Image (cartoon, rainbow, N blue to C red; front, top):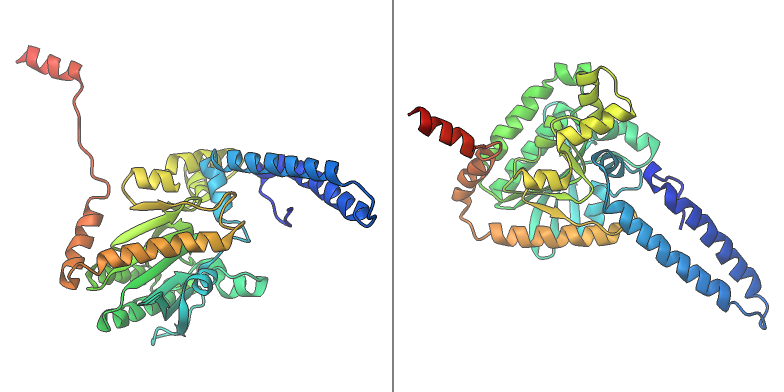
Length: 342
């Protein structure tokens, strides 16, 4: 029941987990005696398990935005390669941007989603220390975005839909990346993805930070996992800019102000749907999370395949033009004052 890594807000669960481990050890020891009565400890264990599940549901149904960011960064949370293995078949990875090299922080390749042939593009953070360093913790270089775009254009050529998985704190900000045109690579992706005459769907599976996320997320349909975040900047970056210090208090305030949760993004019209996660987050039941994503992808791609490819860029353009729309509503007092003055 217990894990090697636990989030701070999950502290109420830890004592119950320790109690359950003690009772399980007691049952194992007593059960060696054929005449032993284990009914009482078994009943107590079931009671604790029910209490643990109730507490888990309570905690995850009342997450603060900052706690949501922590869940999205959980080291056991499924990543792009995990979902590829659980959702798709016959994955054939494609490498390189034909200009500079291959960026392991961006994964691309052809695969099958059931009977649907498609292209997969996604950020990958890495699981082991060596892999994380190689992938720059999911922060892609310009060659990563150029690789993604070249493979997307290949998918358009063959009339295949594109599926992207977003999971990055942001594009890599290093000197070499800037010298090789980081901003230009992302800008070109935004422009060219908006023009592709093939269906594009995106899922924010963990972190969706700034242009690094948007560089592969100009799509016809965008969804987020329930405990993912998607924003113009990370809470720490926002806190450092606004209050010159990224501490716990400021990070929490920034997370609230950024409206970065799936519920916030759905309310603001930035995403189209929020995909529910298993109780306790995707890291507790990756297979269930993958199944929810698979169903959403299948349904959205079937809907989009009914649209003529030539009409997709126009619809995509209108979708993004609507972001940030607002209207001014005058109060009754203001209307009355204007009428009186007139």
